[in-house]
Amino acid sequence: QKEVEQNSGPLSVPEGAIASLNCTYSDRGSQSFFWYRQYSGKSPELIMSIYSNGDKEDGRFTAQLNKASQYVSLLIRDSQPSDSATYLCAAYQAGTALIFGKGTTLSVSS
Amino acid sequence: DTGVSQDPRHKITKRGQNVTFRCDPISEHNRLYWYRQTLGQGPEFLTYFQNEAQLEKSRLLSDRFSAERPKGSFSTLEIQRTEQGDSAMYLCASSFGVLADTQYFGPGTRLTVL
Image 1 (cartoon, each protein chain N blue to C red):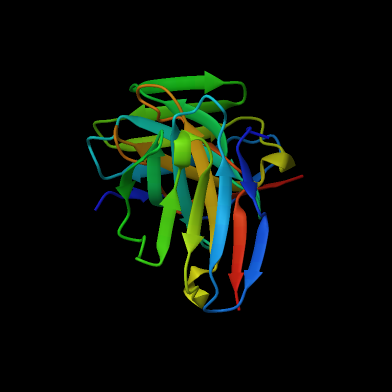
Image 2: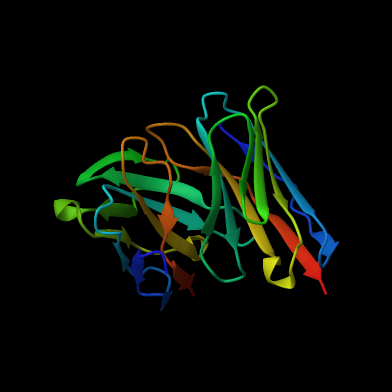
C-alpha cells in the first residue's frame, strides 16, 4: 500500500516565524512530490513541486527532498496569518495518480 | 482560479437517487483525474483519463460509480443509488505533458446525501 504520512497538527507558529511541515512516503518508486495548500471548504492549491534531492526555493517557500530517507518538507519563512491552512503533501509515480497525506493544519497567530 | 471548472458546486440529494457531476479541464490538458475528499482526509484517487481513455480505476470506485470523458474534453462522474457514505467533496484535476504529474484542481463539488 502506497502511503504518504503527515502529522495532522495543528502546528501553531507566531507571525513572522518559520513554519516547518514534514512528510514521509512509502513508495521508493515515487518520482515527484508536491505541496498543496487547502483553505477550509476550498480545493487544494498547488504551492510547490520538487523532483531532485536538495532544496528548492520559491519566494517564502522552500521545499526539501531526501529520497534516501523518503522525506519531504516545506518551510514557510516569515509566516503570515493568511498562511493558516491545511498543507497537503503528495507523491507521484508515472502512470498513476497523486497519493496524498492527510494534511497538516497550520495556524499562524498575529 | 486554475482554469478547471466543476458543476454543480453543491449537490444535496436523498439516499437512493442518482447524481452526475461535470468537470471541464484546462483546454490543452490531456489528463483528467477524479478524487474524493472527506473531512480530515487528503484527496483519495478515484479514476483518471488520458484523452478519452479511462486508464485506471481505484478499488474505491464501486460499481455504483461510473465516469466518462467523451472526445477527451469534459468528464462526467455519475453515482447511482447514492448512500450516506458517498457524502464528500468530489475533486477534479487536470494535467498535461509526458510526465503529467503537475495537477491543477477545480473548485470541487460538495455532495451531501440525506
